[in-house]
Amino acid sequence: MTEIKAVYAAGDKTFDTKAEAVDYLRRPLIQEAFEAVTGNSDVIEWLMENQECVEAAFDTGTIKRVTKVEKKKLDKALDLLKESDEPGFAFLVENVDAISSSFRWPSVKRMTDEEKVSAAKLAIVAESDDEALADWIIANKEAVIECYKAGVVKRTVHPNAQSGLAKYKEEKAAEKAAKEAAAAKLAAEQEPAVE
Image (cartoon, rainbow, N blue to C red; front, side):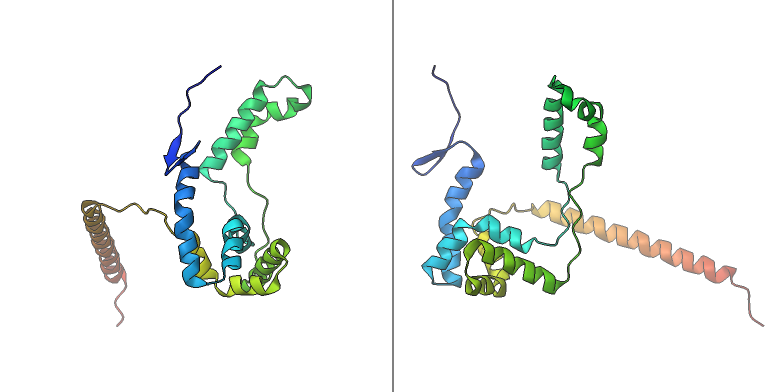
């Protein structure tokens, strides 16, 4: 059976999703950014292949919130669960709404900056088996993160929107100042005179 399938083309390759095509196009830009930071091709290759590991290592100890995308995925999974006739899922099916509304990621112990650095180093060493590499990545954290952002197209804000926002902020600041002045004047009028 033949089927028609929409694909994304990037150069001479095709991809099933736009994200894959964008990642393919960004890869040379990320590599170029890393070459400016370090000339070591082995380090660059490792950083390119282990982006998720490095980013996850730097996120260690931060509180994770449920995103809208994750909430939608949870709701879809719970809908599929509702359709299941499996008797073992009866309790879950009965409490689908409660599960959906109360879902949170497991709590994370708040860490000091030193603990975060130590945890990040452990995660990178576990993946790379190279303590010197982990030390270099941690020492150059900001540069590494910026390199991973290479090629990301940032949406520009229209100048009219920027000026409108600035005008709105000015109006709100003026309103707030006027309210504070009125409250201060009222408070001064209500104070009893000292004789």
